[in-house]
Image (cartoon, rainbow, N blue to C red; front, top):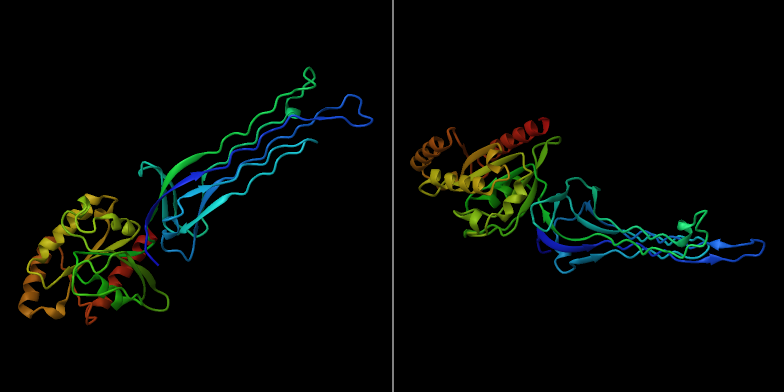
Length: 333
């Protein structure tokens, strides 16, 4: 299934049904009178978060959703039928934005959460509604009120407890595969990961958390370089970030500063999130290079980084324990 995390759709709620002009003429009722009924309510357009979905691909080709008009009124003071609502089912974590892509209309973070995006129009009044002591035979009936309509953006932000960030080829996918049952594509060229991946990390029978891997960032990503920074939205909900740095490159401190600059350029509170820094690929470094690069990175971040190898698993349990502790602390807060 193709991954799609953003879609634009047009929504139109149903118009209200029309009221009618009708008069009754019955045996034993001397003067009869007006009995035109009201129109029914038009259908609403709702959005609902459901389990089992992880992409917005359903809205790639079907982009227009319209609810039906309410039923018209009828004689004998009969009200028109209300129309059924149209429900858009989206993955948990979907944010609904207005056409300006800034105004948040709804943020669905739990299964079953529902929001009304467009309300159906009310039905018009029939002539029985306008009957008074001085106007006993009104010939007025109202049209139904129009339903709301709008363009909206659906944007998926994956629900994950911890997120992986780093330059391309930093070993994020290898780390995800080593720590969970996820099987992302792994290769020795940049941008192997083209869309976010999720994995469930189980430390023991009672402790687990969800880890998200996003495509690598390069300098200028927040301006559209590489794959850009659009995937950073998938780690906005994370409690902690694991910043992986390729230990085989000569200047790990520069790699760290590059990614940090992109996080700050993106905004969304990512640069303020708790961060764990790990120097990856320790198995591919000589002891001398390992010592010098750990010192250089420690000076850049102000603390001692973790030393791990996603390929061999060395240091991975310690990194996962640090992530689990940070996630637990965030949940308690």
